[in-house]
Amino acid sequence: MPSFSEQLRAEAQPLWERIFQHPFLREAREKRLPVEKFRYYILQDFHYLESFARTVAIALGKAPDSESVEALAKRVLTPIERPLHRQLLALVEVTPEEAARAHPAPTNLAYTNHMLVTAFQHGLGPTAAALLPCPWTYHHLGDVLGKIEHPIYGPWSDFYLQGALEHSVQAWRDFVDQAATTAGPAEQEAMRQAFLTSSRYELLFWDMAYKMERWPA
Image (cartoon, rainbow, N blue to C red; front, side, top):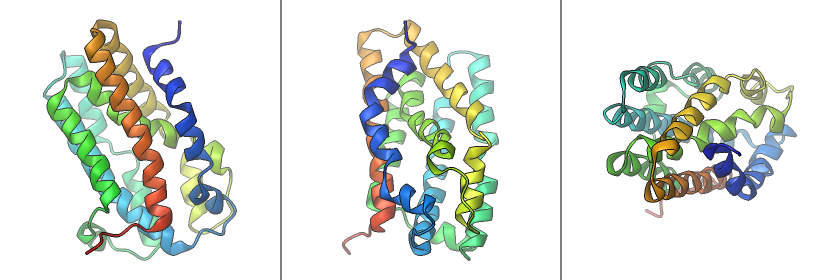
């Protein structure tokens, strides 16, 4: 029988297919994505990862045992994508200070609020389910993007081609699967909804970046 995380992945597959076929990724692969769109994306992702770490920190307080606490602490203390972000920010000529001053776009703010609210209102299972789609979809970007000979998009695609998120994905899947084994129907449904909502936001995040979404005022 498929694990709970595999069942969630199967249900979200239509959304994920739309993610992997998104014009942002296709144009990056074809080396024709305007750099200003990528710069916008990196700035927004910078803020997203800050909220991701805060969500994990909240989940720490709800971990059921010391082993879970240790594993979650590792997720906070070893932000895998931060070195990549520093490199990419330099390549698009944005300083860390400028990145910190940028404001989250509407979709980004909605997505991160979804994660944080899930962490505040629920236990580790739904929180892990809300966090899982991000590393899991990005883990597949190496296959989606392939090897790109480009001064900016090349280092970005290489990071995922190297399987840098493999251990992170497995850790979050383990959290989800372990929580599902003791969760009742209501808790499992909360996990399912959290995962699907985050998968929808992953698709919307690429739309946001491609359109360079702005606040109306």
